Length: 201
Image 1: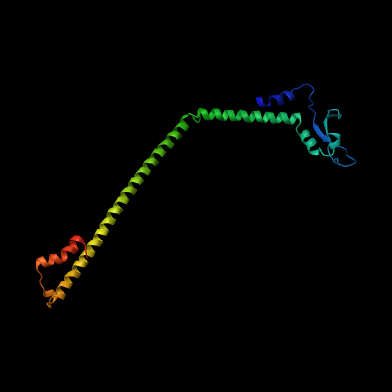
Image 2 (image 1 turned 30 degrees about the horizontal axis):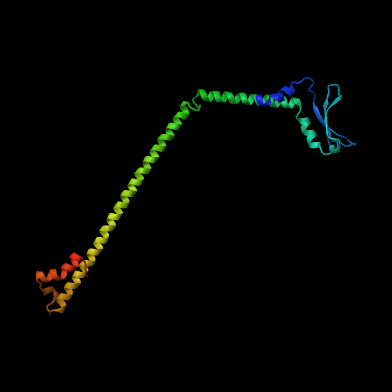
């Protein structure tokens, strides 16, 4: 409450009017007045004590100010300060209670939460490393299968070329049907060898 000490001291000053405050103004037979240009304290004997007046050149432009000053009377300010003190006391008690239950900065509850968060972070990092390793292994396997496929495609092309060369051999040099024809092994490898071993069509 120290930051309100000046206000507290002002409320305790001798001579402060504790009577109800009201905004007043010229009535001109109007109710309420046309405007408020002063704040008065209404004494117990029905007499009024002027608290403040608006400047003469602005007497009809200070209605909001006069209304505010009248509402911010000593009794109202004291009540606000009392409510504030009660609220601050309640907050202190709540803080003390939480600290007793381990909710302080270094209490068991926060330490447990910090430990759990740390474990979660460590596990998440480990899971990421496992996923990265699996992805790398998968990538290597894909590359291996791709290489095997390319080799199989090349082998198939070489085989097709060898068959075509053999067919050409049997049909170009004799009239013996292919299913009855024979070929020397030296001739076979002379024709097929370059296709299968070197891959040259």
